[in-house]
Image 1 (cartoon, one colour):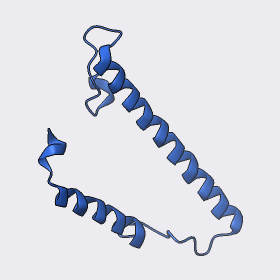
Image 2 (tube, rainbow, N blue to C red):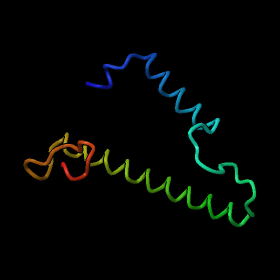
Image 3 (cartoon, rainbow, N blue to C red):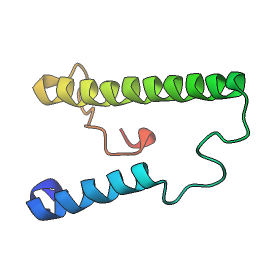
Image 4 (cartoon, rainbow, N blue to C red):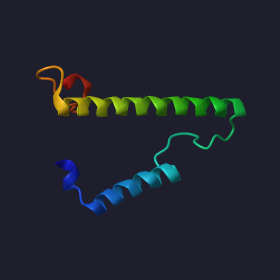
Length: 89
């Protein structure tokens, strides 16, 4: 539906914009390069970032698992696909 409505060049622009924001640090708040921090503080921040990334990966895998399970045939009648907000399904 919505994915097919976006042309290929549009997807290229989206991914390029996201990459530019990530690489060049646009739209950042505060110090993002770690200047003025000790090695221990940087290691702690890296650990927090890794843990948050792992949690996000697990959450996305659960969303995919839930949707694929209910596309095949869910266990419960009336259970819908995830619509974007957790309280709507």
